[in-house]
Image (cartoon, rainbow, N blue to C red; front, side):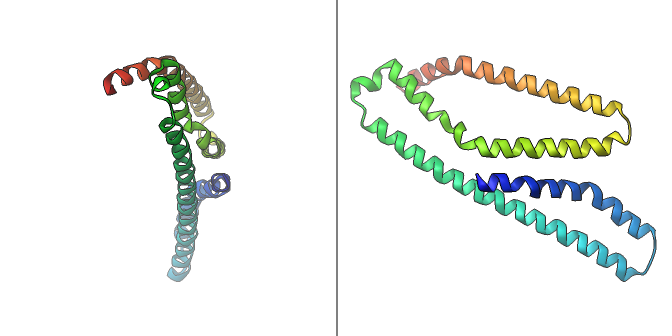
Length: 177
């Protein structure tokens, strides 16, 4: 959770660097001056960008490892419950539904990752919108409409997946029996 939340400011700085650094480099190169000054600016910008890239990679790696540890613990607990089930309950459809839902409950482990990704995407959206809005105001309307359509399609997809989950579980039971 800590790594996921720490990723927010670092990713925002990376996005800002990606937007505002190339024009600065072009300005320095276009302004002339001696070669050593231009090389020093480019080296400094690349070093800062590289540093933030390494920090983002490390945070994502640590976050992935902590998530994997939690998934392994949860998997062990569920396997232990399944192994200790009576054979009569193992074939009970209601018990199968409960076990299937327990196995598909990995989403709770992704809450902080998903929250951090939402915040990062929102901040990046605002940052890019600020830059794009200087070009033409119609682009903002297109971006907002596209985001709303994407959100609604995600809701529809989740609803359909939820509706057919029990049917898929029964089909898997028939195939694996």
